[in-house]
Image 1 (spheres, helix red, strand yellow):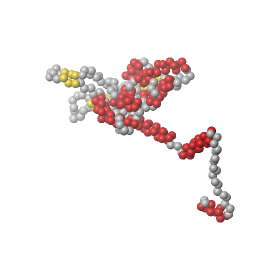
Image 2 (tube, one colour):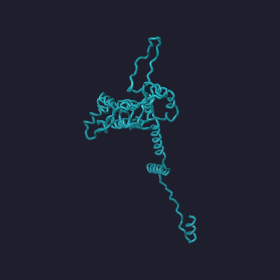
Image 3 (spheres, helix red, strand yellow):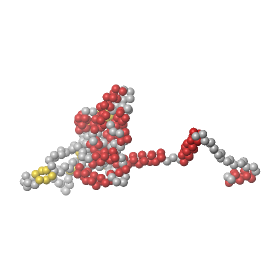
Image 4 (cartoon, helix red, strand yellow):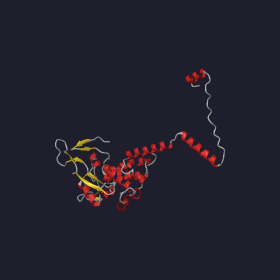
Length: 298
């Protein structure tokens, strides 16, 4: 994890590397081989790798700048055509952004335009305007006080409900640990045709399930949603260790099961069951034998 420093109460440095869009695509070209072959990332489930690649290297929605939709720009003085380049503003991840829903906004660090004085550029740090609002989740039947931005509020209104916003927003745009945790909880509630929804109100359960059933995914994939590669590898190792511990059994259990199976087979086939008793040692007769057994166990 990158080193953190504080500015106006915000802890700079987070858990998701933010690169400009061309850099993200270049990083994916360099790192795409690690998701294939026999590497540690290749051992991860296929459904997770598809979501992780889109999450880490996918295109994010423009927030701090406006994308030029033209493919080429002509210089009217020289008549030269040049391809337009879109380099989005780099957003610095913060711990506070992981605890809230900032709607793609974040801390922006840059330099002001103007004359250079004493060979120094004037730096600025821009922080989005935050407000703490109360939201209600129909799926979880709970209220949450969350730090959000105005853009988040507009996105929630556009999605019509708080649950729709959490479930349908792409991972790279949601970009919040709190949002990922909410999505996993909601997906667990929707799993198995919503059998865990509103246990005391069947009519409400059916209405809410029909409203959000398009977001269902297999139950075994839910716990992998929103995990970073390092977290996914840790989860994979934990599951492999649990499977190994369950597969390893003491020999006495295996011998006992085989003995019971053999005895049941003989009883079913009316075969004689011959169990040879363990020979017991005779009791010591003299005092010398008792002392020898006490000292040397013979």
